[in-house]
Image 1: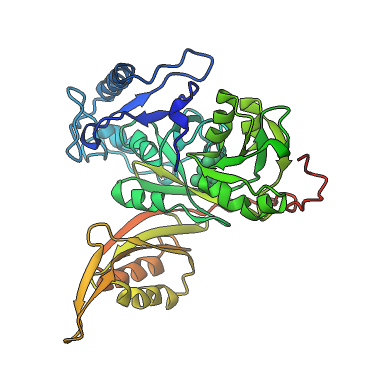
Image 2 (image 1 turned 180 degrees about the vertical axis):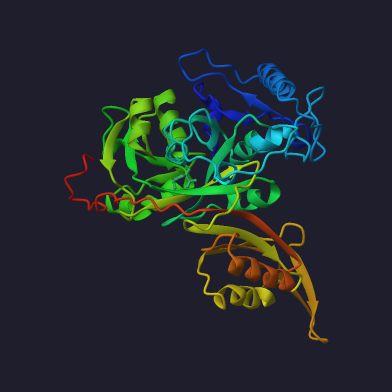
Length: 424
Ligand SMILES: O=C(O)C(=O)C[C@]1(C(=O)O)C=C[C@@H](O)C=C1
């Protein structure tokens, strides 16, 4: 995938420095276009890092954090932690912060508030990205923090630069966002909620550009996948190029004055970057929806008074052989599965099998991700997981969280080339 974003002066995103992975640090590239952008030279990045590090240190001091390094990464004199320790009283429920213990009350057991005032929420992309809209839906009035990569959003939460991350995991047309499944496993954040966002794509170009001028359409790979057929129906058989996010594609066109290229992005991106909407509602299906997960450093306490979903990941040395047994643990308890995903098991990608002198077979090894409709507070879910544990060599609960039950209406039907919705 081409990364167009770093060339733009407008990026206020958190991003990695281009140092080796072992020395990666966050940098923040200043505010949006209303403040001078910080350049992209190594020294600019390093000073940005220093500012960020010092902010984290002072935050830690004010919170009397007792944490040092986690996962083997220290940041010089700054001690950045990735997971909470037991003795960090700032993480404890309100009653726990007092030396004199008081009984837990019902408010301590409430799930994290759905309103997002004062919450810093990391998302991948630039302003105008669907992920930003999802962050706003998950945590209204939050302070959305753009990050240039999914991994940066994970780390922003781990390093206390953000309180939550909202990241896409699957789309009804484009399928799974595999990278985030891998990252869920690699990092130690918890899924604390989900949000489903109707995704309504537009075709954007510089003012005055006409369809005939276009030689290229750029977008996030999901954006391209979700509009594939409609683009063809519109006669746009031009090059299609993947970039980091939909709004970043719009920003690239605006910042570089590219007149032969259109972006697939949101109407809000058109507004932010001063582009014209050449076509509206170009997703291949009117009910195009992306599901995002909300991630936090701590899990929420599962409840039974509203519909919950639980996400797990598991593996077994015997690979797919156990899958049927695992799934039957849910079937016998009438627990519906809403999603199954398999990813390569990066620790053991291949298993060699010597089947009695017939030669050596190479089996691929997988991690299986399952979402099921039950709360971990329910006995049937707990029993199902005890059974699953017997069949698996690795099992982790990624989170038990309220299902997104908000109603939504699909976008208008996808266009045909003769549709009046289009101004191509
Ligand atoms: O590029 C964006 O605008 C994003 O927020 C990313 C993303 C994705 O990763 O799926 C989110 C929603 C849409 O499905 C298209 C792209």
